[in-house]
Amino acid sequence: MKILTAFTVMICFLPTFLSAAESKRPNVLFIAVDDMRINLGCYGDKIAVTPNLDTLAARGILFNRAYCQFASCNASRASLLTGQRPDTISVYKLNTFYRSTAPEVITLPQHFKMNGYHTESIGKILHNYYVQLRDNELSWSTPARMDKLRHVSDYALEENLSAKGKQNRPAAECADVGDDAYYDGKITEDAVRTIKRLAAQDKPFFLAVGFMKPHTPYNAPKEYWDLYDRKDMKALCPVIKPDNCPELNWSGSAELRGYKDCPSKGIIPDEIAARFRHGYYAATSYVDANVGKLITALEESGVTDNTIIIFWSDHGYHLGENSHWTKVTLRDLDAQVPLLVAVPGKKGAQTDALVEYIDMYPTLSDLCGLPKPKGLDGRSFISVLEDPTSDFREAALTQTLRPWGGKRVGSTMGYSIRTPKYRYVMWINRKDKYIIAEELYDMEKDPFQRNNIFNDSEFNNILSKHRELLEATILR
Image (cartoon, rainbow, N blue to C red):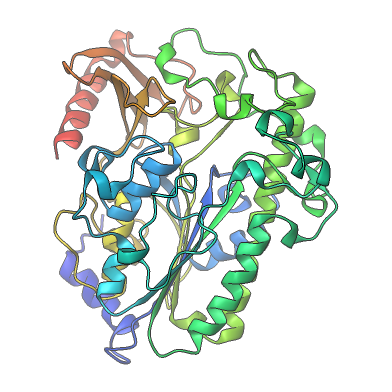
């Protein structure tokens, strides 16, 4: 394996970013999507229609093993934006703002703003439901826009717009309308205008654009539904629960169950499940089209060659696999995330290096020649961008909480590490720290985690190693 010191790597990148002009730092287009698993053509999905993201992946670095810190919107986004683990900033629930638990933290956009960048946010970057989860004074040069749009209101058909409450609206809407009928189209229109405005200024910009889809409801214009055949919409593995996995590793799928066309309990009938998956893929292609418009705006504005583009989803997703829908489990389907990083002057490649979302903050700081603030839990993966064949982390950590739901922090925390071959899960009592349950999976043979080999004596040494590695990762 090629060994590169941090200093050597920085020297490799300096000519690309700083030698032309010390003050001409690269712009950053920071694109977030909501609830998207790796159902993209560039990740090998055979039915996904995602030409713009596939093109972006071809010109950038595609991360095959990127993992979020927490498979829920607010905790994942807060961790990524602060470069700190959920345990460090004490953010686990949907209603917790990192300024109340870690008031002195310097966020990623705040750091760029403090170092001479103009920072703007359009759409969902922080969690969107709670008005108090806003950071306009510290993180953004101008107040965030369209950041508190509600998923449950994102419909185009009048019959659904006029209906009161989630329980009276469907989980998937197909409407013969233009892209601007839904929130993401409106976010894109604003973002395109903003790119053109910022490109005309001398000051480098950090522009965050957060799309609402493919989060429920799975709504998208009809043209994106028409890209798919309903018969292709199948789960990736059996839709029944495995026999030997702890009940803790399910969260109830309550987010989907509240819609009028979804049964309140039990396995969702095949016909309805196929329609939901169809809507999810249509919404994914709709996101892809909006991303394409942003990239076109960069090109037309003449700033593509000096703009880093980073595309990420806050976490992965289940579409009925293992008898689960939505997220908040400790499985690869929820923990693994799409991550594309396009750096001017760098050739496209794929990497199998393990990275975590907390690594994004220090990496972008390095790429833009900014000093890194103290206290970050993440570390820069700039060495992987320089050499995609290199290793980076020994393990990637994701955690979740039980019980899930409500405003209080639950009594049980689940921690999981993903190594190149295995996923290990430990459920512990938060107060007394005793172990409640454990899981171990051979991810090469069992990618959907249906066979818990924790009790198989053949894997005792591997289990011990992963216990030690998890404990070291938590304490690090």
